[in-house]
Image (tube, rainbow, N blue to C red; front, top):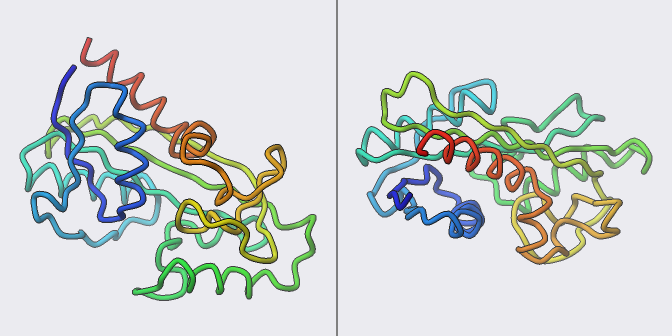
Length: 200
């Protein structure tokens, strides 16, 4: 099952994570940037819609099968926000730090016991750009939002995502630990299983 697959994301953190997770499966994963594929407008209102938009765009331009991820953070006290707007929570060109600062400001009056949150990841695999039946897998990772930044690993909201069982933030995990526990790791395990049964 050695197959070249384009990874439809411009986020280097996601490219690194997914490439590491897929390396055991004899898949040749290449980032869409290697084909000079630009970002596509994420006009969907759900993670599933956005992942399919990104996968179709990358598959059409590259001519290869594509995997796309759409993921984000849902905070209970904010009614599920930032959700699909996680990457641009603080504005269109927001940095991870900008987004974290806005999140912490929005939650400043929310007590510790009411700061539950979950990371969500939808992964989509398209055999080709017009694939009518994409494989869609979803993973969730439950935690809570801290009051301050803790840890330096990972990316995005990792430094403020507290894991009670591990007694640390997501940004204090090693990449290997994170891949085992995370929403993306869970979604990818399901996707690989689905792809293997399809390609068998």
